[in-house]
Amino acid sequence: MMEPVLSLDGITKTFWDSEKSCPALAGVSFDVAAREIVCIMGPSGCGKSTLLRIIGGLDYADAGRIGQTSGNKDKKPSAAMVFQDHALFPWLTVYENIVYGLRLSVQNLPEEEIKKRAESLLELTHLNAFALSYPHQLSGGMKQRASVARALVIKPSVLLMDEPFSALDTFTRRELEDEVLRIRQDLKTTILMVTHNPEEAVYLADRIVILSERPGVVAAILQVDLLYPRDPADPAFIRIREQVTRMIQGKA
Amino acid sequence: MVLILKQRIREYGKGLALIVILLLVWEGIALLIQNNYILPRLGEILAVLLQPAAPVLGGESLIQNTIQSLKEVLAGFLCAAAIAIPFGLLIGWSKEVQKYLNPTIQILRPVPPIAWMPFAIAWFGIGFNSILFIIGMGAFFPILINTVDGVQGVRLRWIEVAETFHATTFEKLRTVILPGALPVIWTGLRVSFGVAWMCVVAAEMLPGTTAGLGYLIMYAYNLGQLQVIGAGMIIIGIIGLGADTLFRAGQARLFGWQGKE
Image 1: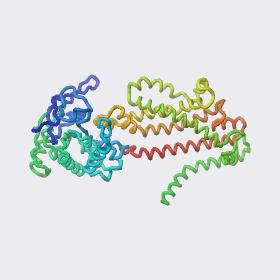
Image 2 (image 1 turned 180 degrees about the horizontal axis):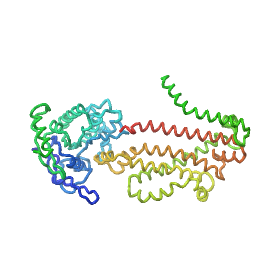
Image 3 (image 1 turned 180 degrees about the vertical axis):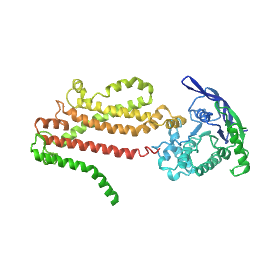
Image 4 (image 1 turned 90 degrees about the vertical axis):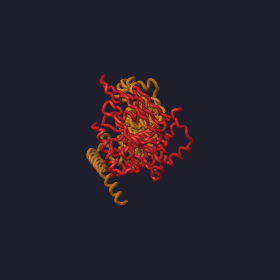
């Protein structure tokens, strides 16, 4: 395996609810290699989102270590996050939303560079025509694409996605999944994604990390050895999907 | 286009109906009792309104009095906003600051601005500064309370987005909290302007003032000129309505995203 872009070592997190402890993660360890797509799955309440939030810097781990190969020399963020609910700023245009992260003082970029990056991402996500629109004027799929563009614009070493497409209809969802694969191809992005949907995981992931129920630990890591583009109707695809489903239910 | 216009007229018509009825009733009763010290005829009120530049009761004209009152309101309103918005951001942002300041605010808030008048005169003397203080006191709290509410209503997720991009605390305040809270702050400004407008009239009624709509009403009352009082009240009402309409139009224009995020 290549040099990992992200390595998790014994990540542990316990929430405290008025004197009652509620362990969420109990020593989660795995690596993510460059250009890899890794999906995290597991039963509800296994701490998937918490794990992503810790990597994204929105939460602290009680114990454990996160290693990132690039981006930590200065204060610039090395991971960018896409949330389930797009979380675009409704008072900014699509363009302004996309450049939000670049305009912050931590980036310290000249305006031409900002413009160049924004334009190439508008191109990539097919949002050129909507640069000056406001989020509420976009469809659900376009909002989520804008949200992906906003995250990618800072050139993160890893893109974190927390159930990014679960609020979308089936067709839009598949469209965006294909876009994720294309983005990985074009930008050589490393992606760590939480999903509830076994089909989505098998469609996208190089590897699927399955966490066990509360407290979350790595129950299994499944290598998906299928060529891209994958066909959900392919018997091999279905076999892996069923295997993943059984593993999440704890029956395998 | 014509259809929209017709619809507009019908909508406005609904609101105008009651006003017309009230005016007719007023005029009818005025005709019946024939007493200018109880109910002046509409024509007499109109006569005052139709000569806005002429001196009223030997003093300033209607326009001059209106400008005087507007000046005081704007000054008091802007001072209040300049203090209330930063404080509101701070209180909404920090639970700790809120704990220190909240009891004081809740005690001062219900005090009618006019009750400060004796203190205002003692501290600032008779005239503009005292009136400014009274208006500021009235205008302050609606802005403060709404700013606090606005900040506390900003979606946590938006703040988290800023955090994932490593925004500084000041950047979070400037790029997320302030714009996110602005629609609610705007409502506070709208309410506050209405309160300020009520305060100015009350404040000018107190001794020592020599101009303004409130002064004019009090002066006309002392001389028994009820038609001037009526004219003053109509101007106050119309300016209040105008300001409210402007604020609402601004709300729709600036914060079209509200409720659609």
